[in-house]
Image (cartoon, rainbow, N blue to C red; front, side):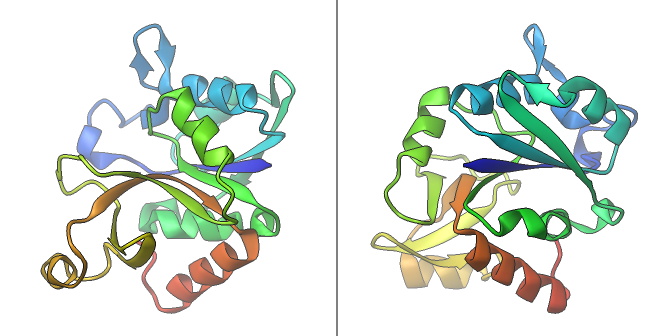
Length: 193
């Protein structure tokens, strides 16, 4: 199993803290968030992590290096990182040809949740938070039963009447070819945000 970590964005809402530092490099306690994430991925047996970089790419590369334990670290540069995270995932589309864990670089999570996601029997799985506080920042998925029927791109009012309350998405375990096709459709449709 591999991972793709989207670490390209600017994080304007955290300015001035992120004007010259990537948000995933901000310290939580004694360590940067990205260091915590990479250690968790390596500890869970991820073989290779691809970091999609853009803003402060040199800083991200300096922190992550080429290996974390036994896990190899590779990089993909997204020159269009200011246009949205879908373009970062699209930049890494070649790495979606096999199953991959897809994550944003700024997510703090307990390691147990990562273990549960990786143990999911389904070829595609999501970690969802039913009790999140909606700040407008979350990626929201709408469900009916155990099926995801819409994402935040659906009007929230319409989605709430059609399917009940949204859940916040934390990380995704994607079947590579399905994820790559979905990302390609969004890019072609001009919806990279």
